[in-house]
Length: 318
Length: 248
Image 1 (tube, helix red, strand yellow):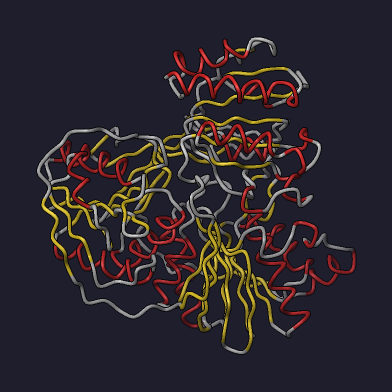
Image 2 (cartoon, each protein chain N blue to C red):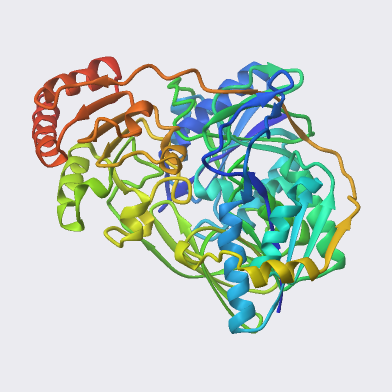
């Protein structure tokens, strides 16, 4: 009996969230007294999972280089049977949310995404997850033979505990792709909203796209991804790919800095899962201040450049 | 082309979220329900296909009669026929199995669902459904063009977009981008009148085991008051983020 981890990689390197998934899986395996086995795809550095307590990895090498949900689901389904897996741990990335339902269908599993902690009960297995777009939590039981837990980004964190890790390169017979990739457009070398520790987000208060250097410069100092509110993407100041909120991308980061964003309920729903929220707005009545941890009531055009300079100095000496 | 749009009936975003029955049930009292926003983008795209390329558009919902006004609204916007599978929906696998049972005897060229519902945020029904039917699936769909049996689909990925090609039948999980907000339709009087005459079928559930159950709901602990830092004391903010919040 084992716990399977779906480990994500990109360009043959583990993705950042691999550490969190490994840590969660190892902790769950300890509680349930089961083996924890990681499955990675075309990863050169799967060995590094040993830092987080994973001692066994099957690194599958005969799948397409790019993520292919249908093929990956096929491979993981094979391992569920082969290793008699009772639990599968995945992240809450776009790819994981694409993949997990397919595995659930193949294995007739119970699947609960957006889980924020280790199970708080094991008989029956009960997890806490967000619901109503971060406005509530639900305690949910999973009672199938195979149970899939989707861990919310940045909720469990990573726990270092180095062990010897055996990586076995494997080939698994799988079905053909159902879809053909025509193109992929992705900004390289830039932190993404899904991956970054910090997201700096701008709203209508910035008055126009020509002022976005304020956001970009602050983001650069913090190694942050840039984001924007819905009106900003609707007006075409920034691309829709940066729109965060209920109908845009979800944000669940360690630090979210909102500049010139009033905090409409749809925006808050999408970003509320972030751990620490800082709001800079010249309107003291902006609803976002009620949801924020730290706030500055002030003019973004004055506050942000100072903040950027001071953070630069802070980073230089720390 | 025959298109089926799967509809969730969800509390409007601005609804107060409360629970009753010892925090085991969502409190629907005074709550305005709407078409799940992600589904509405998909429905609007389906109606675009109907108008531009010719298609029959059906909508389906798994749930209780409480959703009927939402389904009538779909008909008023332009869907041709509505189905409701009459069973309370509590789990994504359960809903997907009901949909799969229906579709396996009533095939469609294209099945559109939303990226996720804004109430339980599972994002799983369309994927499970596609795998049960063994047809292709594209989630987070922000672009869809169809030519005969070929579909070119764009999906949003972390940090960008991916363009994919596949054959119908196919299931997609739609979201904003499939159409823009400005394209969403508000039912007019003629549409509302016509909707009354359009076919609406209530189906018996096939029934299946339900592998997950929400046993308790909780609201987040009330948030501590925001700490305001004077605009001329940025050092204090950096100090707080470094020492207290531990995020830089």
